[in-house]
Image (cartoon, one colour):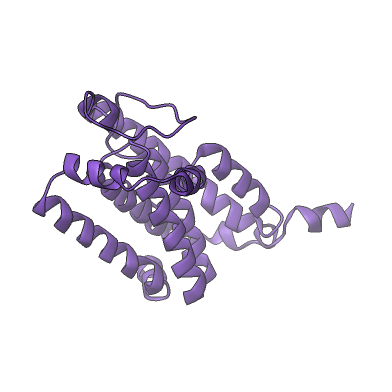
Length: 219
């Protein structure tokens, strides 16, 4: 618990914006509703917006996450392991919740309405809650924010994660509630798992301070 509290104290420029993001989202849902929010965000479309939000949603995609973890192996094994472990746990939790709640997605709930469909984006109909992309984004970028300890990077990682979440609404893949819970799940997993693992003595052996390049040079 002490390790988790330490991480929270030294990464306030990530979790504080996350908290504001969650509160603003909840207030918006309370004032209107999920469908109205989806229609409003999707209605603010443009050619540039289609390109931008498609690019942002890829920042939370499984392929992108895998590439990022691979690149982290060239920085430090500990960082790559923590990111991979947190991503695995949060993804399994998100998938279980998706099948437990089995909520329909916006493309099905809002069918028959005047929607803007982004070319090249495959729409899914089921297992909306929570957003897997948002969960993954807030989880892995949360781990990086915690480990960075730098306010500028913490803000940057939050911004990327938040934009991933908004992109899921713009692309009609998720509702606001899916995104908000995904953000909460991802952030909590990042802090809890990182805190627990960093408390283990075996995580501080010399091997974890190395990277792929250092091992290659030794050979």
